[in-house]
Amino acid sequence: MGHQPVIVLDNGGCSCKIGLAGQSEPYRVFPNAIGRAKGERQSFVGDQLLSYRDASSLVLRRPLDRGYLVNWDVEKAVWWRAFKSLLQVQPQDCSLLMTEPPFNLPSIQSSTLQMVFEEYGFSSFAALPAQPLSLRAWAAERPDLPAAAAGVGVVVDAGFSFTHAVPLCDGRVLWPSVRRINLGGKALTNYLKELVSYRSINMMEETYLVEHIKDAVCFVSADLKADLAAARAGTHKLEYVLPDGVNEQLGHVRQPQPKERGKPSDKSNREQVLMLNNERFMVPEVLFQPSDIGLQQAGLAQTIVDAVEAAHPDLHPLLYSNVVCTGGSARCPGFRERLYNELRPLVPDDIEVGVHMPADPVLAAWKGASAYGMTSDYHQHAISKAHYEEVGCDILLNLTPGAAKTAATEYYTSSG
Image (cartoon, rainbow, N blue to C red; front, top):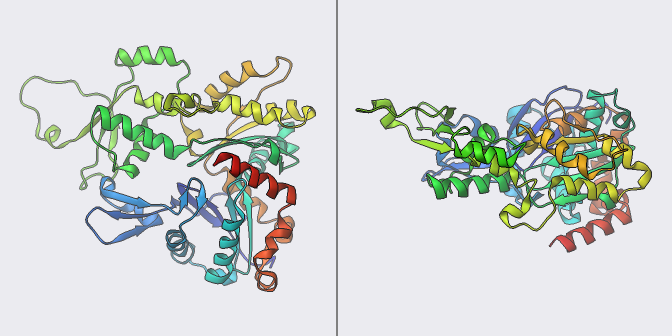
């Protein structure tokens, strides 16, 4: 088993990152979805969405709902394309290392085991939470940080469906201390859709395009009052030229064009332009102020404090010194600086606060998994197909401590 290639799959709600263990970068990053153009029967799977010409006409189906893998019909199609067309490997000749969300439900774990071994025929398989893998990648990136080298820190995973604050010690998740905000990149996209549809152009059906617009124009405000004043003065105005389905797939950003008297050019007649102003910073603001959209939960900084305070007091200084931001929403400009500015006043003055971000917060989990897949620990942890055929899904009972299963059950019961 140790000589077989290990496929590393970071199976996110928005995108898949796939490659082979030992590589420094994933082979491909592509949408974890199937898309279909309005009025057409042809479907586009995974990476095919990246080259489709008219993004504004795509309707997406995703396999993950609220962070959990629930639609295997979609996921099977995405995985088959990833394994056969992108990596061009035979699953039965490989091992699979996959990320999973914190407190993944046992029923989903069982379904995943069955799919991996019975549908694809992998020789061995392991699923791990993304957060300890991200911390492993961060420790390799910054070995000079004592807490990172010791495997201690708080991984803030601002993902597609949720945002988790996950304390770790010695590279292991402190499960009773994990805290979650029921907000992620999907909620931010939906909020942006509502704002622009109400104020400008109806884009409620243009999810794929609005996701791209959000990534291109949004930023986290360092001073909300000042930015609101600047927005009223027009400082933050941008124009987004929407795709025409011929020359551009996703459109582009440009500075507001001055209105000239007289007859407009033919080009301006053809362009459909979305004007953006305070939406650019009010959308990511909800991560720090969830009450802005009616969600009665603590903001990101307070959630981190709640997670750390639930851990042993002796760990608090190390945890606060190594807060690592990962996930797609963490790439939003100004995210790390705003989080530090809000977290610092909530922490005792004699404790150092360090808020860090990997070179690419989206790829941190994959890079950590790639390194882990080359270790002997991985091969000891992985489930072989022979063992699965002998024991079946009951093997999960030996992999997850009873306390963790109990915590998972209580967590989801209380979360609804």
